[in-house]
Length: 396
Image (cartoon, rainbow, N blue to C red; front, side, top):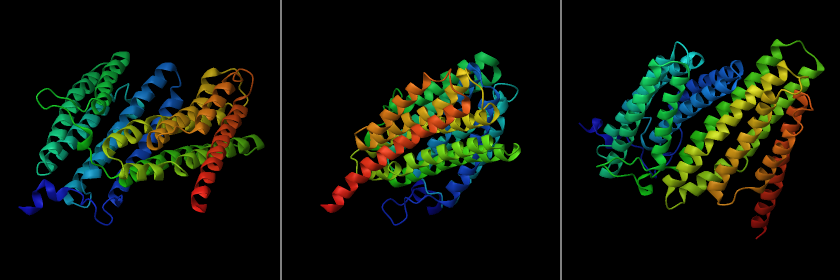
């Protein structure tokens, strides 16, 4: 039957609107609003070295399941009913995954692991079937991917039966396997490895998908500020902290969207190996961007709850680390898509390192203001630099 062939589930490359993000993809992303909220709250509630390691692992997992789905919907058409069904099932499993995050290293570890493995392996098997008529290279590609995800899934499930640090180790091994997959071309004995030419992607679609995910994360940071501000008695200090958190989030939005994702989309669309570039710029480089926004949201909570505290290096690490991770991720992202790492971002990281020397001396809310000013300096520097170049090209 014509309606059941994998070829009919693929996006029509090159047609008008073929790279447009569908409403169902946006609907799918709503689950991850919950995920990001759960991650930031989990980190704030268990702000220790072990708690940070656990939150980092879950952040890697949430990002990985989302970005793999974004890659799949870059090839498969969400307007086709079987693909829609697959995404809806993934949403349900994603909701279970998100709900399990606070107790992922407690009583709900097996539930978290099972939901994650079902999402990763199930989606990959579906795509393997969908690609059966799309060419041997695409079909082999997803055979390799499914194999890697199945192997990592064993460690996820084993971890679900273990406890505490043993679970952390097992899940870390699972993530290492999954993150090594794309870098190694998903090499499987007997099946070979995937080549860069096999990853024919729509840069516009990938850039828009990641941009919308970043919007979700920034939205969570704003929600944290607004919710906490509404629950506290009104005062000049809470107003300063609220404005500081908001301005810091706006600065992050500006740094990512003003000169980042549009240039990346254009570069990938015209690159000889778009899959290789997309893998570096989106699959990997967005991880510190995501982590930076989550840590920034946690830092804003600390600024509200402990504004006058001094000498707490852990809290200061959250304030400076959120901005630092975000800048490092953008440095990687923009460097990968332009070939030239922005000097403004390097300078911003240097400023944050220098601010760390003040950490034992200044109050928490003051450090928050200084970290936000560092982001503003970077944004202003980049704008003046790139706006001048754009004006020069226009004159000529």
